[in-house]
Amino acid sequence: ETGVTQTPRHLVMGMTNKKSLKCEQHLGHNAMYWYKQSAKKPLELMFVYNFKEQTENNSVPSRFSPECPNSSHLFLHLHTLQPEDSALYLCASSQDLGGVTEAFFGQGTRLTVV
Amino acid sequence: GQQVMQIPQYQHVQEGEDFTTYCNSSTTLSNIQWYKQRPGGHPVFLIQLVKSGEVKKQKRLTFQFGEAKKNSSLHITATQTTDVGTYFCAVTDSWGKFQFGAGTQVVVTP
Image 1 (cartoon, rainbow over the protein chains, first blue to last red):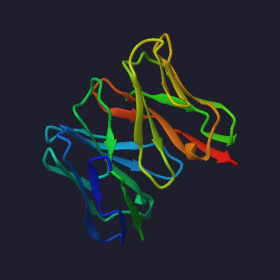
Image 2: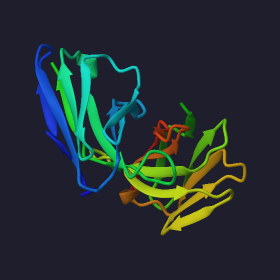
Image 3: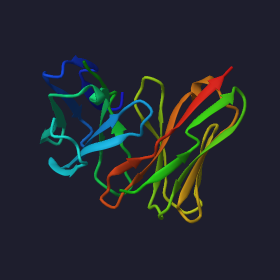
Image 4: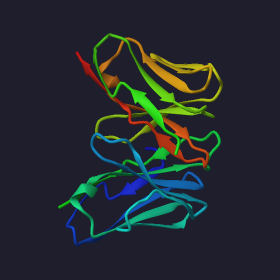
């Protein structure tokens, strides 16, 4: 248990569905991240929030929409996804951006788009 | 963003053998971290290196930061089946965000 909780753990959705991924951390961290991990590809940084403010949108398609209502919660809203969006979506948090800090990952949501 | 190259991409190891995986950057790094992801799991932090030439050990794992702070290595001695997984190096870019290498996937044969 890393202190970062993601729900759901598995999700199957159709291309016309709307769903949301949730991430929660009670580590008192100020920075939260969404990463996408596809088979045989590196971890891709999608979004970064620092003190609830989005600091990075790494050229992510608009069908992915993040939301950070407070420092402890992060959502990823999904809409009209494509089969190639099937992947493991990992949430992470760290004390702050930069400096000497480590990332704590959640267990991920395995997403399958059909 | 800052790029780090990891080699090899795959590593097949006989149980009991040693192996090394490398992480290289074209720019000087402020620090480097290593993570391990077990099959079906999520990345877990192993260690952080900050100082030039730093060497840290965790049981059978030895982590080294190059003198020029442009490369790092992870050496595992007497590999065990529990060492199976993907090992990532990660750096923080100039904006403080984590950028991960592609990882070295380690398979151990008994």
